[in-house]
Length: 477
Image (cartoon, rainbow, N blue to C red; front, side):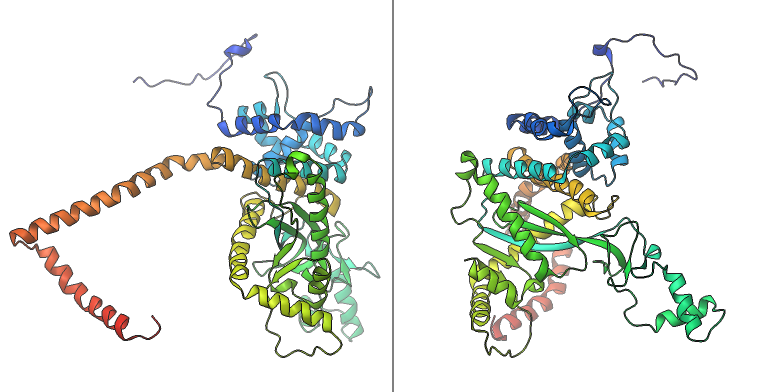
C-alpha cells in the first residue's frame, strides 16, 4: 500500500454536516451503562433531587444533574483522581461525550463547572443518589443485607506535614523548634541542632497539638506503606454475599476502629431501611437484615460486642491475644465475648473470615488503587465525602454491569482476547496430554525409549522415591 503524507498546512472547512463527522470505534461499556441507568430512571430521579439547588429563571448556564453525576462516575471507571483530569478526559473522548449526552457542537464542562456544582449540591443529595444505586443493586438481586463486613483504610490528604501549626499558639513547626532550642540555652540554633532536638522529643506528631490550617479535618497518621502523612479514614460496610457496598463513611484518621464502627453500622441500617421502602427491592432483601457483622481484630472490644449483642446482632470479630482476662463485674461483656469467640471458631465463622479478606480488600483495590482515590485532591470532609459517595456508587454499578454483561469496568474489555486465548489453551491442554500418553504407549509397545525419556527417568527417580518415602512414613498426612 502507498505511504500517505500529512499536509503541512490545512485550512479548516467552513461548514461540515454532523453526519459526516469522523467517529472512532465507540466503547460498548458506556452505552450499556447508559442503558442500565435509563432502565431504572436515573436522569429523572437525580433531576428531582437537585431541582431545589437551581434557580427557576436567572443564573449562569447550568450543568444538568445527570451530567454532573455521570462525570463523577467517569472518575471511578477511568481511574481519574481529580476533577480537572475528568474534564480533560471527557474533552478528548467521543465515547464519553456520548455517555454524557453532549452533542457534536456542545462544549464539555470544564473542571471549574464541575467544582461549582459539587459545592452547590448538598452532601445529603449525594447520599440519596448513593442510596438509589444501592436500591438498583437490590432490584438486580445483588444485595442480601444479612451479613455485613466492616473494614477501614486511609486516604492521603491534600495537605503537607510541613504546613502544620500549633493548635494553641499558631506557630509553625520550625518556629516551635526554634523556641524550644532557645529555651534550652541555644541562642542561634543551626539545622543540625534543631534536628537533634526534634529527634529526642517524644510524641512530636500528636494530633491534639498540631493541625493543618488548610485542611483541619486531616490527621497525622501512618499509611499502609509505613509513611507518616496527613490522611483521612474511610470505612466500608460490605455485603458478604455479593460484595456490594451498602454504606461508606468518612471519619477522622486518628479515630480508632472500635469508635468508628458504630457510625458505619448506623449508616448501613439507614441505607438498607430506605432501600426496603421500595416494594420491588424489599422482596430481594433478606428478612434478617443486618443480623451479622464480620470484622477483624481491630474492632474487638467489650463495648462493641456488648452493644451489638444488645441489638440482637451476631458478631464474628477476630479476637486478639490478650492472655487471661478478669471478668469481675462484667457478666454481660463476658457473655458477649465468649459467644463471639465460639462463633468465630466455628465453620461458618472461618468461612466468613476468608470471604471478608477477599470481598472487602477487592472493594478497596477497585475504589482507591485502580479507581484513583488513594490520594484526595479535595479538602474538608463534606467535599471529600461528596466525591467518595459517587465513587463507591460507581463500584456498585460495576457489579450490576458485571452481573449483566460480564464486565465491571471499561478497561476489562481490553483483556478479552488474551482471556480467549487462555481458554483455548486450557481446552486443548487435555488433548495434548492424551496425545503424549498415546505416543508413550506406542513407543513402549515397540520397545523404543528415547534419550530424553531415559534422561528424565534418571533425574526424577530420586525425587519420586524421596517423595514416596515421605508420604509413607510422615505422620498426619
